[in-house]
Image 1: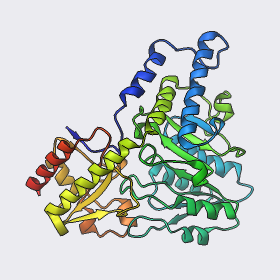
Image 2: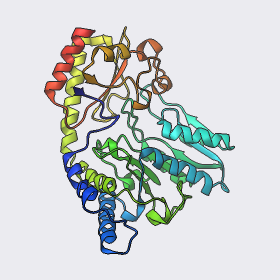
Image 3: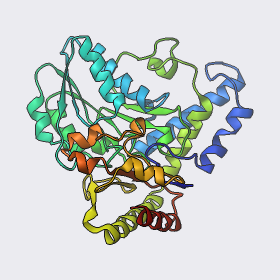
Image 4: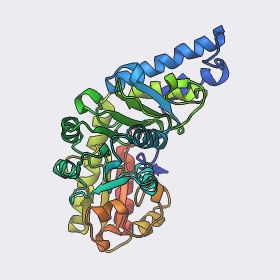
Length: 369
C-alpha cells in the first residue's frame, strides 16, 4: 500500500518503539510509589517531560501529559471557561478548527457562553485584524489552530498572540498537525497554551501533551489524585509518555522534513504538468505544511478517485470526516465552490514516503482520471 495519510496518523518510529518497550515489560512500577520500582519510572517520566519541553523551548514544569490532542484542547477550553468566568464568558475561535475545539466551544454555548467563529480567506487564513475587532471586555480566550489538518495552511499565530497579549486575553493554539513538521517554539509564538498529539509525530495513539505557560492556573478537566502537579489526574501512561518524549527528540532533527518537502513539491509539479488547469490547490500556496497537498481534481469526485485507488491511503477531508462526498466544512469556510471542493483529496506525506511511491501514484492517477 502507498500510505499518504500521515495527517490522519503516523506509524510509530522504530526509535520510539524501542524506547517504550522496556516500560511495557520491565519497568512497570507506579510512579507515585515511593519504592525503587516506582521511582525509576517517575525519573523516566520526568526525563520524557524534559524532552517535550526542549522540543517546544519551555520549562519542563510547563508540560503536562494527556490522553491526546482532544483532551488537551478540552482541558484548555473548559478549564479557562470555568476558571475565568468571573472575568467574562466570551471565546473566539475560527470556523476551520478541528472538532476537538469546535465541539467544546459549542458545548459551552449551551451553558451560556458566547463564541465568535472567525471567517478565513480563500487560502484558509485567519485575519489577525478580525481577532482584534472581535475582542470585548468579556473575552477570556482565543483559540486558533497552528496549521490546518486538511489544507496544511499555517496561521499567523505570532500576530494573533501579540493582539491577545496587548488585551490581556489568554491564547491557545492546537499545534497537533504542526508538531514534527515545522519548528515549534512557544516563546517565539508567545502563546499561553499549545497542544500536541503523539500519533501525529510517530508516537502511539492515546498520548498527547499540553503546554501551559508558567503562572497560569486553570481547573483540571479530570479530577482525582494529584498527578501532573494536580493538573491532570490519572496514573501516568508510562510507556506512551516515554514514547512521546523520544518522538519529540527525534522530531527535532528537521533534515527529514526538508526531504519530505522536496518530495511534496515534486508530487505537485508532476500533477500540474499532467493535469494542468484540471487541478486546483486548496490552501495557501506557500504558508503551508511541507508535507500536505489538498488537490481538487475538477469534474470528478475525490471519493470516487480514492475508491479506484484501492491500494492508496489518502483522505477526502480530515480523518474525522473520511468518506464524505459533500464539501468539507473547511473548504466551505474558504469559499471553495461545490463543484471544485467535491473533487478534493488530501495527500499527506511522511518521512517513510518514497519517490518511487509518488511516481507510481502519479501513473495511477493519470490512468484513472
